[in-house]
Length: 134
Length: 412
Image 1 (cartoon, rainbow over the protein chains, first blue to last red):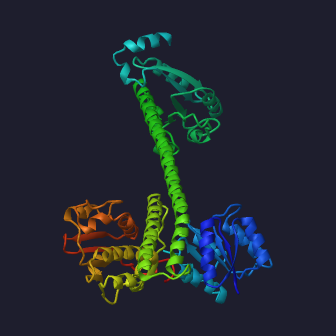
Image 2 (image 1 turned 180 degrees about the vertical axis):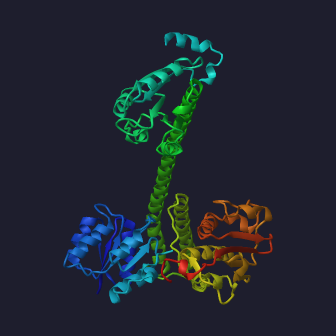
Image 3 (image 1 turned 180 degrees about the horizontal axis):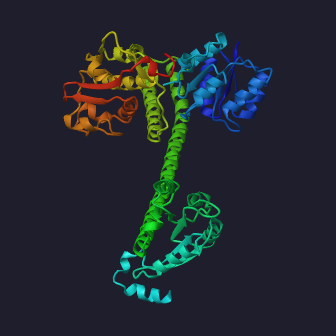
């Protein structure tokens, strides 16, 4: 069973996406801030990380950089999720090598597509994958 | 001097003199005879009282300027230590102090020297050979007045700059505010939408078709809220001129195909007939494809929304060669827009007055305003024609790329 680490500070979103991921057949681990995100990632060695950008204790980009610098998690695909409309976020995500960038709210199909792509063809990073939710 | 001050207010011509006060003049000339001449000429003047300080070189003049204020400086073109024209450049005063208006005095009629002087920042020039009491005083008065006007203009300029910076930062603040409001609303909205979607998808147990239909309305409403907030943020970014078009050379066919495809489920759901007429070959355009898709999606979305089931929508793309534009129009067989409302529908948050018609209640929000801004940023135009009850046509133009060589970006 593949494990998804969900890093998200909103409890309700964590709950909802958690249920969704389990219904899709994934094992779910979660973290609600930047520091525990890194600790969780080292502990549970996820197959993919869903990473919120606005996080307490350091934003998602910092978390991504740390994870990429750690041996255990350097190759773990990252999918950014955000409700922010700030400009330049998608570009930063792309520069960090994220597999996908999902704008909240996103639907289950988008989530499933992003996760499957990151698990089975993580090297395809294209506009299609970076497509934002509408 | 005291006598003069007592006299000034009663003088009938006092108003025409600069402020009616004492005018402090600094004469910089190494010729004591000329210093004396200036003093004598200026002391004769009936209308204005001049207080003259004379020094013999540039260094002394600098000292004087730092130590006290002058209304005008008369400076010789050639001084022992520097050229009169260098004086202004070398003058370093506090930021709060304005450099006084400076008149450069030339020996001959020297036009070159005069031009050089004005270029260096001198207010005026005066030929020593033609100077008289009258012309000297007039030149000083003019220079003082000019200096005063310049000071006023500079002051206004600075005030405008300050006001402009304030507005800009206010705009940025508003933009950040909307962005954070949007974030704060969309976070719980995303959770709410997902909970509904979980039930809809049967994750929490079987759902009946009837329940699904109700839940689907909830999902649509969630999407509507989120799209309204996106529009709001987009609009404030457009207002703050924070959006730039990433234009590349491309063709419209791709744009149209993508838009039509994204609409297909909505079109099917309402049993609408969507016809696409593209004139071929179309010229290349210099466009930000994603932005043009946004415009066309908005127009198509409105057409779908306001056309009754079974109606027809036509997307027509044609090349208006004479005007060097490509025109994109979306025609629907919907309820139409009252003629009096047509000019305003692109204005932000404009809503057609409620007259009981189905079209009216919905409101057009910001979508059309954003569409217009994007079209304008492409150098095109957007407009609408309609008859109430007889469909509407929304059309916009995009300029044709003049040549593929004037485009620095790569081919899309």
